[in-house]
Image 1 (tube, rainbow, N blue to C red):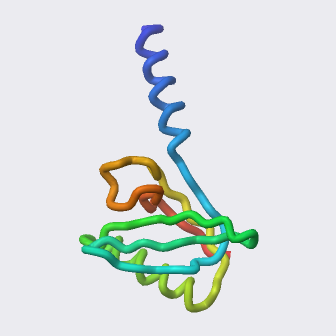
Image 2 (tube, one colour):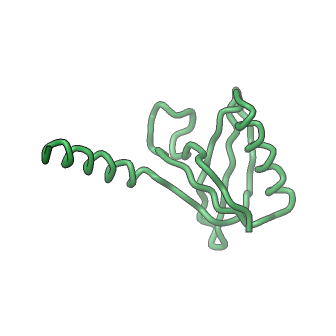
Length: 102
């Protein structure tokens, strides 16, 4: 039992390190091959890219929301994960998970 708990703890802690987030404004939105990508930059111009597949209704809604946030220059908080995963369509971009408007 102790062995199983140790493995679960290691898996949970390793996944926590792969979460990325950024608060700022969306400076750039682009589409490439069925994938939308947004760049969020803070006031110091430190930026993070996020991506979402456009294959689903959710992906299309996220893309639309990104466009609205860019046009309105709203401050957003976006969270994603696995920004270094080589299987993702963009290196150094996080797979979109969720967002808030401020």
